[in-house]
Length: 393
Image (cartoon, rainbow, N blue to C red; front, top):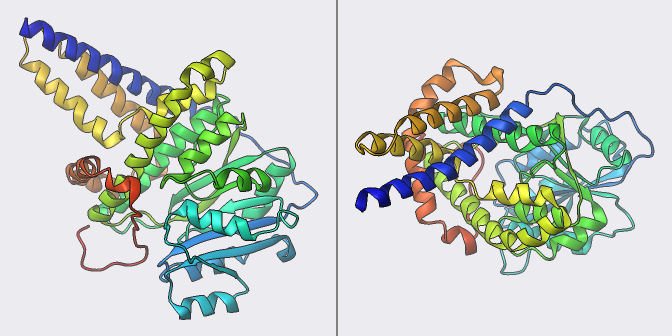
């Protein structure tokens, strides 16, 4: 009897993990399909509102704003708005001298969604066509707005640009950067190649101004990007992925910050999955297959957890005579192959090889995030940017 119970448990877990692994492999292969979207040079020129939520970001915000002001786009067609929260007066004064519009948060609610809602309530919809959401540490290139304008002029309503790492100073930062590119390959590029909406990532995002103004006020979660995705899918708006529009993003450098950041991400993923799964029946009935795809995607455990759990099932099956271990061994090989296919060739370096030895520590940090995920649901968790000496790498 006990052996039968173990067999059913093993079988059910294998089916779930096999579906998740198959999903990763499918879109990893799709990301290798060559054709990509090219938008021609377009007129007229859209008017952009550039939002930088900045909580205690004195170390990085000035560099990000300066990089954005170097756009080859007419300066009278975009406005940079920094939503300043708990930053030093000297930083705010410097930003004003740079010609930035400053909005100060005065309420007690602290979240990125709250900051964006405050900013949108003060911006005139008559003055802007598109809103761009950035992080305070993001660096862009001069053609950023020109390429966004081309896409919006051709009919895009929501865009995710290609966010990539700007630092690789620690093993944690290297692995975080590789994880970002795996996400780009599977959840953005691979989806776009198969005609599905790309996933949002939290910054380097652009939306139709009126749509964003209407929807952002409805978001109270710490995971505003996931709820924006949900609303886009409900409204049947495709999110376009611009692979060639690159922004640089500072990656997490230390394992304790990694744990804090993932705690917030895990909490928001659980919240949006529990919210969206209620729409499964109606989504199937009306044929909203992108939403069904997203619900399944949100059901997946973090990759580092799958990399740890699948080998554990394989090892456990070696000691159970009535349970085949070969299927788990095959799943390990297939999953690693899928992840390897999703990593850009340029990232296969000696640095990455050495960083891989840090995976056990990252796995433990992720387990800590899962155990304490509830704090990421209601508490604003800030991960500091800039050089932070004397911390564990």
